[in-house]
Length: 486
View 1 (cartoon, rainbow, N blue to C red):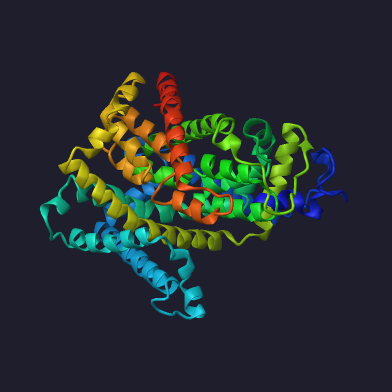
View 2 (cartoon, rainbow, N blue to C red; view 1 turned 45 degrees about the horizontal axis):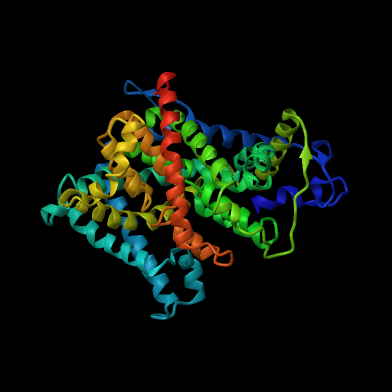
C-alpha cells in the first residue's frame, strides 16, 4: 500500500536492494510520463486543492467553495436535507444492527449478503451499536417536531440537529468527493513524498510514514490506521513507530476540520485554520515523540524488519521524485468521475456510521449542559488557564476542549456562539486532540491489539496532547491576529 511501495518496488531501483546504503534520488528510475496520467493528477490536485483552500468572495464574505456548495443546498432544499440526514441515521443504525447480530450469532447472514452490504464495515462495539440505535429514536421526534420540550428546545436539538448534524450530513459526503480526488489520483503521494526528508530527523519516523500521515489528513484516521497496519504487518514499522503515527498524526482530517469550521460559520478563514492546525499538530508531535510514554514503547517488530533505504537529494530532486510518484499513482487510478463517485459513496458510509453516535452523545451532552452544571464543573480548572492565554470566551472554550475527548464535533458545538478567535482556537485544539473516545480510540485498541494500545495509555496521551495544544495553539492564533490573518 501507500506506506511501503514507494521504496520496495524494484522498478524504483537501479538493480540494488532496499537494504543497501544511502543513495541519491538519481538512483531512482523515474517512469515515462504519459500525457493522460499527468493531466489526471494535475486536474485532481488542482480541483481538490481549490475546493478546500482557495478563497473566493460570496455574499460579501471571503470563504471557500465547500462552504458555498453546502450553503446553496441548505438554502434551496431544507426539507430534503432533513430527510437526507434522517435517512443516513436510519441506514447506519440498521446496517450496524445487521452486522452486530451476525457477529454475535443472533442471526446467520450469508457471506454474499455480508459482502454486498459491506456489513463488516459497520461492526463496532456494543456501546456504539446502542448509540446508533438510540440515534434513530431521537431523530424521529426531532424530524416531525413532536416531543418533549427538553428534546425539541433550541438549546438542545436546535444545536445538535439544526446546527451540527444537518451540516455534517452534507459537508462530509461532498468533501469526500474532493478528498478522494486528492487521495486516489496522486495528491496523497505528492504531499507525502515531499514530506519524507523531514520525517526521520524531526519525528524519528521512517520517510514512508509521511504517506500514512498524509492519508489521515487528506482521507481519514481510519485510512491512516489501515495503511499503518499494512506496513506494520510487513515489517515496515516497529511498535513505537506505529504508536507514534496513530496517536500523533491520525488527527482530524481536512474534511472533518472543514465540517467543524462550517458548523462554527468560520469557513471564510479556513485556509488560515488549516495552516495553524498543521503547525500545532506538528509542534505537538515533535515534543511527544521524545518523551514518555511514546519514547518508552519498545522498538519491536512483529515481522521480518524491512528498513527503507536513505536517499539524499536537492529540493528539486525531491520535487521531481514526488511528481513521479503522483503520476504513477494517477496512471493506476480510476478516472476523475469514478474517483469522485467512489469518494461520495465512502463519505455517505462514514457519515451514516457517525451521525447516530453524534446525535446520541451530542444530545446527552447538551442536555447535561442545559439542565446541570456537570461540564461547568469539569471545565472549571481550565478556565483561568485559557483566560491567562488570552482566549476571549474561556468558559466556552474550556467546555469545548473537555468534550473534544469524547467527539470532536460535540466539542465544537459548544463554541457556536463564541468570539471568532475562540472559534478558531477551538477548531484547532479539538481537531488536533487526535484521540477521540467515540471513534478513533476504540478503533486503535481493536486494530493494534498486538502492540498493545490500551485505553489507559490513550487517556494519558489525550491529556498530554491537550496540555500541549492549549498553549501552542494560543500562541499561533495570537500570532495570526497580529499579522492580520484573522
